[in-house]
Length: 129
Image (cartoon, rainbow, N blue to C red; front, side):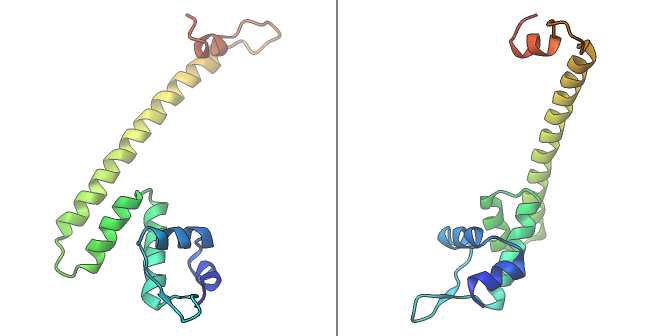
């Protein structure tokens, strides 16, 4: 398969596929004319990477997870550690978003939203009490 077909098959943009090749996450074969020739294993890796990235794993986490996936002697505890660490990061982001939501909700409630220029939202953003 050529890169356009692989893109359509995996749902990943061509640019992303090239990037994954540039950083050695995938290594498609090259024909004599220099064109990439993707194998089933390359497509499987790209789908794996697409799913992992959709779950928010970093590129380095993806590299680790791919290595674990390909290592038949891996310990599932190693995989769980990577996923658990990522889950902790997601939970921290959720807590941050909840705090942001609470603050913004309070500011929206405090704003009269009328024709007067006084606005607690702008005061807060400007650092004024």
